[in-house]
Image (cartoon, rainbow over all chains, first blue to last red; front, side, top):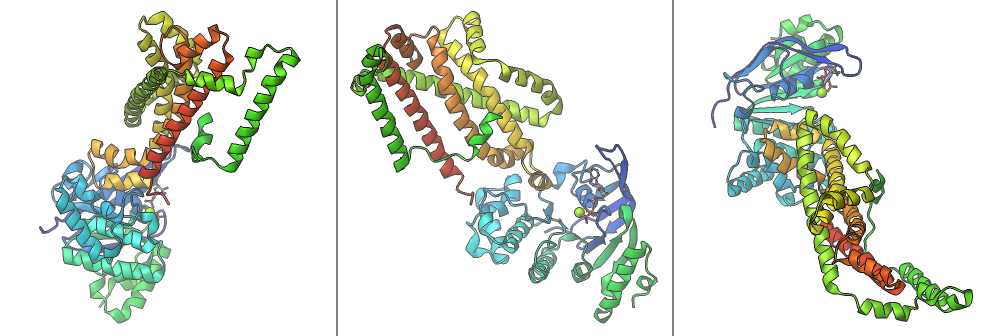
Length: 261
Length: 257
Ligand SMILES: Nc1ncnc2c1ncn2[C@@H]1O[C@H](COP(=O)(O)OP(=O)(O)OP(=O)(O)O)[C@@H](O)[C@H]1O
Ligand SMILES: [Mg+2]
């Protein structure tokens, strides 16, 4: 597996015009962010701060109003097809196709890439097994629990062994124990795969658990703080959490974040 | 639209006791009426006895059933392809949708009888007339139903699919079509009953074969028994086709809880 390219976000801006009111909403206002290869980054921010908009632009479903996103030397929006099989997503709801079995759901991205049938099967099975779903490959989504469905969705994302993994509130709807378990599995697999991973969340616990790095978004995706978690010793995680909380509340970087070690 | 009520279809071709009882009661009443008719001054041919009707049923010519059935099925397949292809095009292009939508509304408001008269005035060939009427009546129903269903595919699923970057063909084959299969079945059931009813009227005008033609012959002979017999055939045909579709549907939609 190749080394994932660096992601460079420069002066990114996204303005929506609300169809009903005709008003403009600045969802993202001049965001600059660089994400290193294989980095695992959590993005936290309050509701409506533009996280999902950023996510949609990262996967190339929305065009920037201004500025750019470059992954290597390519843009996920303009070079949409180039990234087929190189990026994978996990969403808040599992978003499985209800008429496909777990196995057929997991192999969907491989199908779209036009891989040979037996390779599709083999890879999808391998990932379902890794996620502990070996017994349920033929089950339909409605026959699985919420946590299991999300496991299928994760297997689906990993099946292409993507350079970049993106998750938007992927564990938010599960109970705490299941969420933590699944998140750890996800992170471990992401590291094994050597993918760059971007996890969007509004839960601080989750962001801290993710590890490498936390980007704290204020209103309109203003980058309030960029935290390298590994500079913080574990015993000070409580303090880190409070500092992020304070940052979100005041919409200004908390001074404690400046002096980690 | 009226056919929305059909959505939860009851299993056809099962005969619970109540159904049998109500049919028997109806048959008994009819038989009673046929014996009472002369006393009430109604001519005897108006309400033929069950025996007379059974005799008519025995004279039914299978070739007419086959011909009508073939017309219905061919026209339904053509309507379905026409409706689905146009629906996909309209889903893709908002402009196309804006131009075609009013036309389709108008088409759907035209009474069947007008179509039949237009067909007679415009086209010389009998088969083409019948086909034209059926397609122009059933096609828009398929179109509107499938377009509506495509629009109702959850945004979340479309978004997920897009994020894996399918080609346009893959997007339709792997997401849109499977997602609208339940609607396609409902639409087929609605259109089968529509087509069976329309085809007989269309066949009344100018056809020399088919159930509609036999009905018009029966009418010329003042044979209520024959009309009754052919009507039974039509209803049975409709139920059979619906049962067939329901079976396929059951098999294909096993993924639903
Ligand atoms: N398609 C759209 N049209 C108009 N406005 C939009 C659109 N998508 C998002 N917005 C607006 O942009 C802003 C940011 O929305 P976004 O969904 O990115 O927030 P979020 O951080 O993901 O919130 P949450 O945590 O609730 O998911 C909101 O004010 C929202 O109303
Ligand atoms: Mg969101």
